[in-house]
Image (cartoon, rainbow, N blue to C red; front, side, top):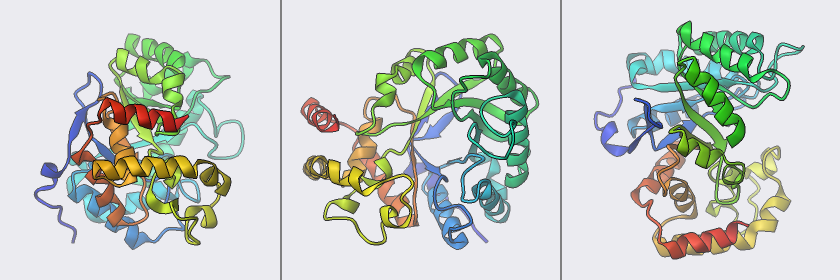
Length: 328
């Protein structure tokens, strides 16, 4: 039977999520990859154990994570029941709805019908009465923002989520949504967006600074640019890499186009006494605006390696300038 490491909370940094009472670990575990039906179940358990034993209390899912869609929630639900039932109140579990999940006009986007139905399905798969954070997963150009935010309000009022978040929103829409949720006294505390050295969209679309001004948290996914910001591709593309086995998210030409910059970034990391991955993660956290970094993993050792980024999140201005020059 699994028993958590008694010293787990001494191994992690916890950051306040905006002006809320919620603290999140600086490193959180995302279940986007490797927790679906194509993954190894024992390896999933080992990764969750390693994460929790090292103070990672936050586990992030979505209704469509798999493959197949829903299977990551189902598998994590089994792990919760088998190993973590005694620790539920020490965990932050989040899920989302917004992308295509089932056929027909009610299985996508941001209608009240879809969001509430999707969360009900997610709770069944997870075996939970509530999630800690429920996100709307992407902006909906057709559904009125008031309806989507009203659905989030109803979800909190019903006790099915403690907090709500927004994912893949831009700064302007975030501000409008925040006004609606604040008027309705809904605990909106966090934004989830893609962010890494190569992807600065949240800087360009106003999300990062708007979140800071509104005192909302930010949690970032794809911090390693699907593996580009690691030593994985410094000497070519391995045959067992994600590019070879699953080319949906990272293409060979993307790596080749940025390989020279990746190698120069690696040189900066070496001078800092870090791996490239450690530096890429610590860079996201360096200015204190981002609350938590969402890592993915295919094995427990990757989780331990990524946590090492917290040992040095300070950068000189020269380092930041050099990194900026390589990100464009």
